[in-house]
Length: 414
Image 1 (cartoon, rainbow, N blue to C red):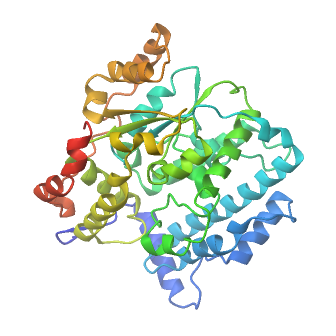
Image 2 (cartoon, rainbow, N blue to C red; image 1 turned 90 degrees about the vertical axis):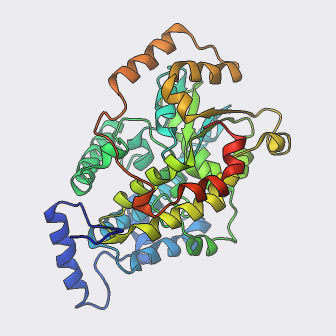
Image 3 (cartoon, rainbow, N blue to C red; image 1 turned 60 degrees about the vertical axis):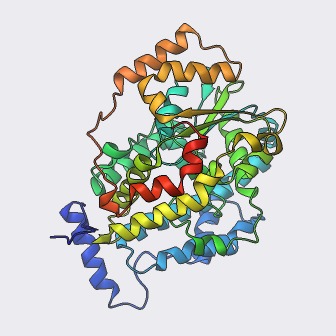
């Protein structure tokens, strides 16, 4: 039984058995299983992509930094295996993209104009808003399979084949973490955040390893570089589909904390800032992050974990929202921005979205409204079960949160 303030692994018995077996095995070796050096990853990426002549500065210290994550104490074998696959996949994606851009230079001529970008903390309604906006046939969002396997591996590697492989990958992931959809639904052909696209530059991470120590090793790298790569991937996806002329609808927590870099690449972006009461958003975020990491270590200290989430959010995320007094100095003449509250989105979603369309000069017609209503009918809240969490579970104090984050809560709708 787990002691108070900890969370024991909820993984299936076979997952715990495999991790336990490799833990014993690793203690007998000088190097744990499923490690990967920078040189090994590069050799595999060259073999998989067929590109040997390349200039990717992120294959230096950034890639080495990622590989060092595989040496973290307490990381379970299956997580290390999964992360090694992700590192290799990112490196291979990077070289495949370089090859596509060399062989087909017209990809760079694709115009990514006035993208709609959802900005918000995890668990603040960003997924609901993103997927509702994706129902508009004038919009285009990256699908989950496109974020993981955006580029063909050979001449016979169709989009359908890659989507099928991601479906199998997600099925295996649900076996390891069976409550995933209860907290955050993931599907190969569902719109997904584009954080994974940014990972291909090895400067930003969606793996929860974007810690102060991780970031401190990358201070010398151009912060705009991941977003230039992000744009190149969107241009490729647009070039190889019928999405030309459509508005990209994007979301990622990385866009919020790196907004100046986003605007350097997309100066005409239309930004939607969504806000939720931190007293509700923070424990939900901590619960998602804790559950996602359960297969890394057993008996996670929830109070310390929750405090880390809170301090990081207070320091990096809440100050990152663009306040009204800062908008003229931060946004260019072609960018637009609107704020909405989570409670409004949940209570009156169609009216709230109609307000966004009005702010952006876009018609919210009857067909779009019908499509969004159908999505809401098919995907009610708690469709996969209710996500349960509490402030107390993560050692968070409501009075402290309300006092320390009062400037944010008084400045934005929640």
